[in-house]
Image (cartoon, rainbow over all chains, first blue to last red; front, side, top):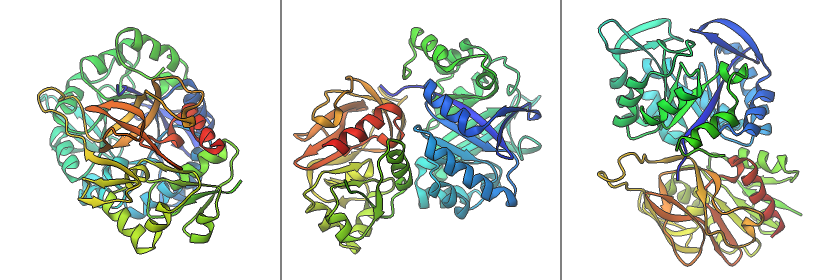
Length: 252
Length: 199
């Protein structure tokens, strides 16, 4: 049976792993290649590397880092951050990335998703969405690392992106990210039930029960977290055994 | 030993090369006929779309070359599907090494609503046959990414369940094919690559 996936996320700035709490207050959490290899050995199912300071000058640094990662890590990994063209993706895939994630650039130019899916296949195109529930109860799409609000509803954008060829959705709730109070179950469930592609839930995972809830109640296909893994608050082996004991199919 | 990875317009060639490096095996990535023909072992990787890949192979005469290889050949993912007879993916006639047909996953809307296509993630392989799976337990986890599958047939040497039970590996004479990605399947995948090297 296909398993639910546990995905540690490594935010990268200047070649180091960091984790912002509510997208701010960056703390250093170590070397990304070392940390990635450690997680792979611990039983992580995939890794996500997000370059949060991606600028044109830094592209070369990122592709070199991706090359190092792919030499050392024996599980699939996704790279995101500042990707805005077919050429950007080509370089990352050539250096060994399995998937790439796009966010703001895809929202501003939706045809990018189509171009990437045609060129490289939907299986390597992950659409990342940062979303926030506003006072009116609706979930809206935010851009630029959560700094810019749009008037587009999260569900509408996700559906459009899947129609254009996105192969997976990485959904981050800004209301929950960094809080350790649990994942956004309602919007995750909405997407997981309505979309024909896998949904990775992100933001808010603080306890093992939160992971159980997002798989069982929100039907997420995968769950992503960062600081709780980086700061060893939850170990991946312990988390997987807990989920297995609760009847969730995981790779142990 | 000379190990060659066939170079063509497929996505994961570097990943296969790096995975071999991790287990201490050097390989050459090439599309040169002489080098492929004289290799001790050949890996035929692949991520992509069937008709485009077959078109590319035919244009360069690689289709005839691959079919006529006599040393051990390992097809991976799309590589394995291209070694089958026919793929429903854009109505593509493939290499015809394995008689098995490649079909699209079609989950029953009522019964299997939760199953998404493509299948992405870790799934188990069972009913393991041949030395390719030496040292592996039944129901070992491998990493899969695919929307099409090879049906079960006489050449099935591993089975996986998704929508229906299908061939996660095939074998005929010197040809082997795996639907999953050994290069991304952690220690299990490394064991399978090591086993292939030893065949």
